[in-house]
Image (spheres, rainbow, N blue to C red):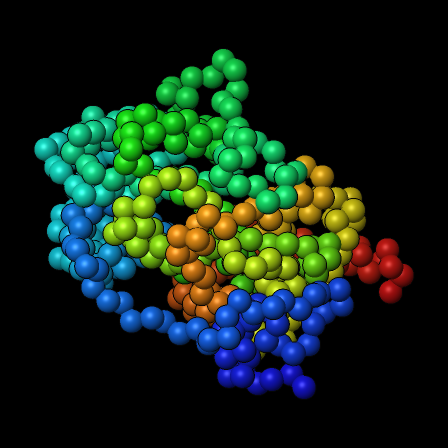
Length: 396
């Protein structure tokens, strides 16, 4: 018997994903829960020592979660950003709001001293260098958000912090590239930015390589596409097989762990990937469905046919990459080192429900743009075309 919504939420808090449904799609393997204790938000206690903390960015996606948690823990927070994304979001709540640009003006940081810096927005090594003109010698700990896109060979299953990274193409100077180059050379630029951090802040750096970051405030629509689409109901195109892997981390899990790492002054390089056990696409999609009332139905279409239809992984089938060949390890990276340092993961049901609630607050134009796949996601119209072609191929 399929449990009711309340029973499902309780069950998924133990096991995660679609396991709480009581009914599994063909081919999906049940997962062993990591803990028998139901999940609930933990009370936020004050940290043993209050830190003087600088957050670069702080008003975009992961940043607000860092700020909220750091303030709740009793830290003194200063923000540095261009004052363009959600200006005034923390007015009166943080110690200072400094305005500048990592690309060309970091003068607002002059003469400031901090216990720890959380560097969220940096892609270019020049941004690390520019901030260091003011910060080098004035900070005790530098934490840098990088990316698992730094890894060179995504065919390796279990990529870890020792796996080889992507070099900058020969003949390109990463210090002269601009914002237009950020997407094309994202991984190599982050590698060089990491090198700049290590060189500038020896013996005081922490580098975090997250996988896909999801949750409320995420406007990339990668995870939000699935939440919005499943809540729309009807027949939903699903990629390849239910057993294909999918890896991502809730922005709040990442933010709160980083603040705790700052408190402990934990140094080193860490993959921030989750969850702690392998998650399948079936777990993800059925887990999202369980927090809606739309009654969506999934049609799993083989990767070969999706290729024929020019359906792109990650762009159209978001949160997914083909689980063989050069992308075999893309959704199977190792987060063991970070988990060993206290990284935890809230249940998928919580992430899905909170993301859906946030999505429903967006302006109608944004919600419709999501369903049209204007940023990421296949879009309703193209999805219907591919499903029709698949039914024709199958003869029904």
